Image (tube, rainbow, N blue to C red; front, side, top):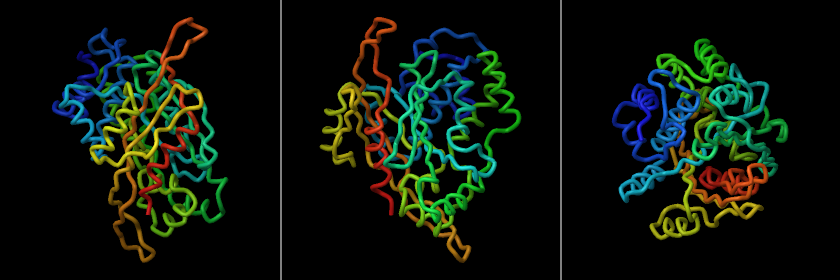
Length: 342
């Protein structure tokens, strides 16, 4: 199915070839089967943003790209369940709003609402899930985590300030106005949506300057997650394919020699099961003590798989997919970027 508004938005941002590939790859929400030419709803813009962010993840992760291409070649598709990003709840964050606030101002006008809070105490973080009000089961959720530097050493906090203190705000005044109008009206003219889309997609990136290598070393000793933020910023940490049987998939990928997580994570509810590839290794630039630039291999983004069982919803008196997350699962999945840290 091709919603012409979503198609126009993606074509203007990514070009025809990538847009066609995304429509052939990803599930498409049934709610978007009906549209008004030239007027972009919040759900349409949310779906376009999600599709563009998924494409960006594939560009950064060879493992994700290979899996996706194989899936499509075999006649399958990807059910985009959720994307995850990391933030830092710290007052010394340059021009970028601290932590989750930098993305709540984007997600809320697009129709996303908080769908759960998850303490990630072993990592010194807190996670929050955002589900879309108009199609929570079909528009990919966001799992936004905040790191709490105050839970770490004074040296660590100084390094955090040195790294993120140069952050820029990616939202232009025009984008802020367009998001306000979208939240007020629930839609935007196609021209305004086309102007807004690259700005909000660009927010999912690193906003601070090249990190110092000495600061990175300090961060890495106490938090692989903060070290990851130092090089990757607010880019998608991972994107997730919702599959029927994650256990069978995990074994099949191991048999192919793929770098899979050893065990599948199981939620306390017994309804959510997750596994992932280990993070792809990428080369990133650092500033040495003498001011010169040096390259170093670090963990990048990765690809996750999830199986969600149904639960009986007492409010609607119906069986529904369990869209919740699990703190234990999340902390296990986050280790996929720690194993490659060096």
